[in-house]
Amino acid sequence: MAKQTEIVTSSEDEVFDIELEADILKANRELALENHAKLKENGITAIDVMGSVGSGKTSLIKAIVSLLKATHRIAVIEGDVTTTIDADIIASEGVPTVQVNTGKECHLDANLIKKALALMQLSKLDLIFIENVGNLICPAEFPLGSDKRLVVISVTEGPYMVVKHPMMFHEANSVAINKVDLANAMEVNPSNLKNDISRLNPKATVVSTDCRHMVGIREVIRSLGLT
Ligand code: MG
Image (cartoon, rainbow, N blue to C red; front, side, top):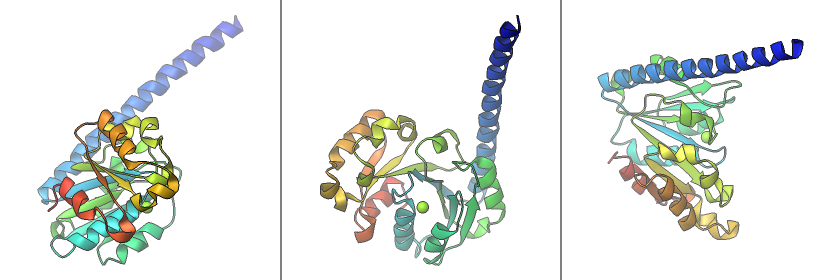
């Protein structure tokens, strides 16, 4: 009898967990819509940049900022579990940067972006890049209110990272395959990665990049409609 009670309790907890998760995702979507409206009121385009730790998100944002900062008023929101390393790198481009540390959380959410936007002079901006926490799983579920999603992958992550993380690519507008200068050394064929992405999301624009040598950066900018 006691055993049966245990099973029933466990099942109820499970249902409760699912409902709680649905509530969190719904609340996040509503806040994302608020963020989006606030950005539009100020005429700002926002790009959410996602990808694994070490894929080159910060390097790509820095490269894009270096090419666009003369013609666009840009700011960057830097999401990381801890440290201001990436924010310091971006700030070296001379654009306003807000660091958001998520502590234990593996992704940014719309509430964190709402707080970051409150710290920024939105009337003085045209374009905001939001670098998400390095992770190919959790950020996909949490829209932030951005206009477009840019996913960064790199050949150093091996040949299977696209097929293993399909969720991340379904919603992407653009995907950068980064560090292509290292493709031969890694024995990874960027064309295979591109085919994997196109199978998951035929609408995504896929660009090969090498941020160290500024290869492909203007193509990424074009793919995001920022020229
Ligand atoms: Mg980074």
